[in-house]
Length: 345
Image 1 (cartoon, rainbow, N blue to C red):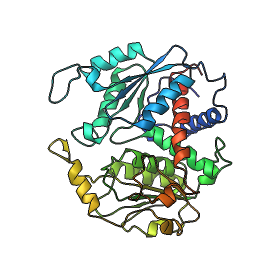
Image 2: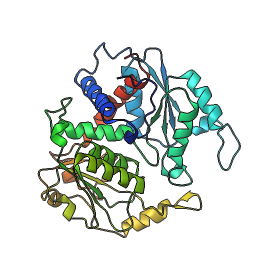
Image 3: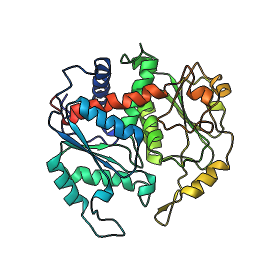
Image 4: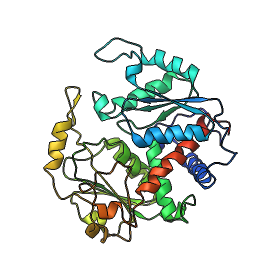
């Protein structure tokens, strides 16, 4: 399968067999991490990481991925250049993208909710870079989607329901019950990670339940895609508004705080207002008592975890927690993405 030159902006835009090819390669790379088969796939090539927002896992995992493939990851922030915005003159995306593409084999971009004037603007920016650049654009998290996280999540779940690290079983996920529940907290998180979790869970045959307080619905288009994915698999999709019932019979529990659809006003992200709204809604923490209602579920989270509010320590550090496996899988998934889209595979 030839995926060379492909952008990776949202998993929904890749065919299921393409995603499976990516996952299979990631698992092989995890099982045989430093094999000579992988160590020169990006030899003498540079991958540009363009960070509007910082991240521990994203930067470290992409830098490690490029190094382990024999290449180099170069870090850049907007302050390193003069880029045109709504409020200042500067270089256009067309000019920046076309020049960057002449220096590197791929461009990763991370831009989240507090760096954009309205929901979706970050994703639109990535797509404009993809239009002008003739190298792959890799979404390192925008305000709508986080495809590398979604793939790392899925690989982790399949390992837990498979034969362990590097030996996933995706067939065993089919028919399992996935609960995405809003979590209490004061971090005013974006929708990108949870929306990718919905998309990958529904693509790979899990029943999907969303539990959220009133006013915390996610992107309507993502809901539509999730419904379509579930319909294609003969699985269920439902939304509940209480913090308890979704746990019944769940096999995978994902607890995460996220903002409301009213998070933007007059071109600004209203972080403090969103924090105050969230803190006024107690009782949405994943606890051991709630996990006891599940069918021996695993707990998953993309990190960083807001312990004590989104989830209790007992669950996050418990024997059924997949959080560190999923975090490790960012490295292996991103190695596979880079190898397939810009490497000598």
